[in-house]
Amino acid sequence: MKKYLPIMFLILLLLVSCQSIVSNSMPGNGEEGNFDTNYLNNSKEDSLKANQKKDLYLQIGLPGEKLLNISVDKVPVLNSYLEQFEDKKNELNRMQGKYLFTYNQKDYILLNYSCGTKLCNHLLLEHNEGKLQSLEMAELSFMQDSKLNNNYIAFLFGKSEGADVLRNQVIIVDLKRFQEIFPPDDLKILCSFEFPIQKIEWNDGALIANVANITDSTYEGLKEWNMKKTTQQLKWKIQ
Image 1: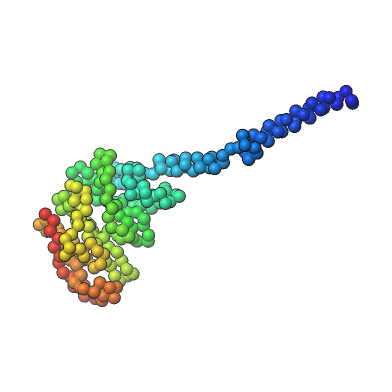
Image 2: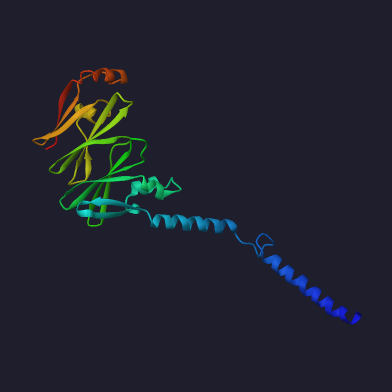
């Protein structure tokens, strides 16, 4: 038995040495063998976010059963909006794009996003051979009507208060410059979501709006106006 003692002693030394090496190489033991777990976790999160962004596309139906794929990266407003969501794809799927018309070989789409039960924020998109422009429109509302007239389009947006009161806003966009046109001071009520606007129509280069003929724009005042719905015509000369 004594003659095996040196061999057993050597084996014991080897086992202790191997255990020490394995122990030092594991995360959290010693300085040289440490792994930065925060770095690994952050890398995984960054990789996941990058992969999510690559897959963020809007699909809009166009005439002729065509599909327009829009990368969210090309629409700064949406890109910024989606940053607050962990599940970006799910929020993207909640958005609704409506093709409006094609003018001068450009497709125009109204996109609804940040929607609640009925009301949404709106974004007008202009698509031309892969190039995109976007214009922020009304917030927390629904589109009630739109009227095209040469280079201009007028939108009528609505915002309901309960079942009895509806307030409206008009937005006119110059399609040549792709920018919103603002009314003169005496017509600012058209863009204020203050009064009901029954109808909009183009007539000889001017937008005619049938607006509630009242001065009391409180909830009770508008509720009472609903009994008669008397209107006045306001003329917004554009051309």
